[in-house]
Length: 503
Ligand SMILES: Cc1cc2nc3c(=O)[nH]c(=O)nc-3n(C[C@H](O)[C@H](O)[C@H](O)COP(=O)(O)OP(=O)(O)OC[C@H]3O[C@@H](n4cnc5c(N)ncnc54)[C@H](O)[C@@H]3O)c2cc1C
Image 1 (cartoon, rainbow, N blue to C red):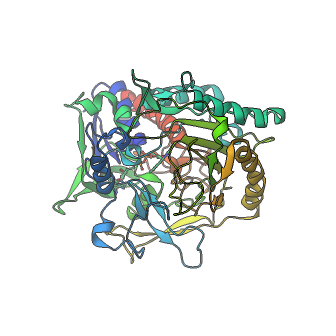
Image 2 (tube, rainbow, N blue to C red):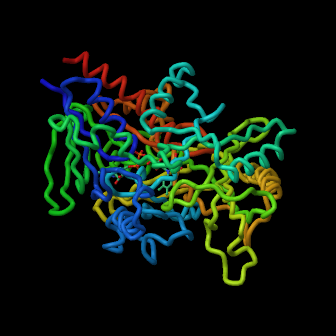
């Protein structure tokens, strides 16, 4: 019989599983279910490519889940407060701080076809040194990374023909050259258009031909369909209970393999709801705490303007200083834009700065600890009736020491370009990176400190595979999507081999 795979969640990692399995196993069929609605055409497209700002705003609002309708998210004042708390740009708050731990007031995610891949900024750095998963062979990892870069359409900007971007790069390079610190353009997931602008990648490019109707006889994407729990027979996962969010009707769907790709908060929530509760579930929560500032660029530094990336997105250049354990043990990203990325107060001397602004974020590593964790409350459910998510999370002296050191590097970069605007830099509220990791971490052995093996298979539950940032077990200072898609490539290849063998 043809194998059947159920993928829960339609973000980049779920999409990678669907595409690779359909391409590699000739008779496999894939049902992908997504709790949220379609918000873009083609499905999963990055909203930054939508030219009409009203349509863009509508797509963002439609991705903000059901909690803003019902008001039961538990966060007073609604769900999204742009720029002031965790949720932004098409996301909504998920969970809330556990009693006694104010470390992370809430997390955030998107609920729509394409997941956060419809809203992301497209920065695609690769992990460096201790950020890499230590128990995956380096040569093999490079292959998965290359495939992941292909799936996401990663592009390495040269800044040729972009004199302002090139000038900023050279200033920062000059500042750090004597320390031996690498400064380079940041790879982004995007396709250059003929006019020099970029078409930003969304989950649509990961789906690739699937987003255009390929394999229609073997691939189905059902929107507004919530997975309520995974079904098991003995230890084995055999399908799931699915709920139509429009009618509330529930049905049981059988599958040979279930892939949970429902983000780092809701994948462990589903496992908990399904009675799959290994010791490490929800633990070792990390993100990369962020020191963020906006610099008003000195007008004398830049040559006349260049064309930019298109009217819908003002970002002209992204420059990165990667993690370097000895010289620069954090990651920096600097984005140049003619408009300030934060609102500037009336009367600020930095308003309408003629040379534009550089938003500079220094991401530091949060060391994984079992006590930084999600817990799930069956008696205080979320807006979907799934167990309520509580977040216990604290920074320690280790992270504070990193911040102190990062401040010095950031201050040097700022001084090389201009001056920080009012109230900057500042440590962003915990959770605002949107990059939650570790909650379903992978590990080399089933020793209670991991949820799945290095092929993303849940320990002791055959037929259950995980995907997403929650799998990343290391302390990571940079954007995780490329890493998570590479882990999905590895898991999907192993699963494809298994399904092909079983026939
Ligand atoms: C504004 C913004 C900027 C970002 N910028 C970057 C960046 O520059 N670089 C980077 O690397 N990352 C960035 N990210 C993060 C990036 O988008 C995520 O890492 C990536 O989308 C994760 O992919 P995923 O497939 O694991 O999960 P997601 O994209 O989060 O998708 C998970 C999907 O699962 C669905 N789901 C959840 N529970 C259920 C359920 N029970 N049943 C059915 N469906 C369910 C959700 O609705 C969601 O659509 C950004 C995110 C945002 C919001």
